[in-house]
Image 1 (spheres, rainbow, N blue to C red):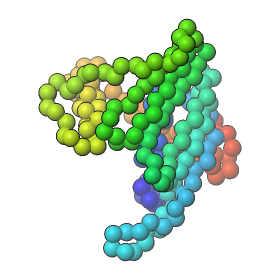
Image 2 (image 1 turned 135 degrees about the vertical axis):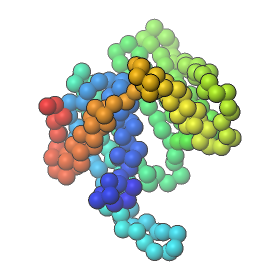
Image 3 (image 1 turned 120 degrees about the horizontal axis):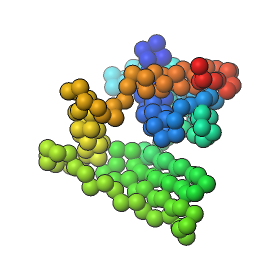
Length: 196
């Protein structure tokens, strides 16, 4: 996470999931403009020495999607006393938003509303549980463990040659292209096109 020459950086480590998520929702990205930086250039190690850091710990991406949607992704690993995730989507017929603790013990509360409603309402969380029936451990990562187990169950058909909605190498390549373009943009490239 700390050295560029070793593939480090939180934009790729954490933000890659957000990039993949918004592409899954809104389609192909057409261009990106970004500010990607290293805020803390030295980190203390357990042995008392200091680690020189040149990989990003903070990134702000503005994406233009091919369908006209504008997406803003902000990732930071240096927000003191804040460990949260939020998501907001606004359209001409409704909105959806969520705030939750990162690796929190309580499930995210999603709110949605349409132009026909006086205000947003809480969308019930899924009650789906892993088919194994095994209860997750009682710790902060329990929600993530359940989500991973459900995702792996959804992928099982692909392992035996069936069809499943499994991320592909093409999806990973798209994310890498966005990350590379964001770094190029931040280095002075302005808006960087992602269209071939």
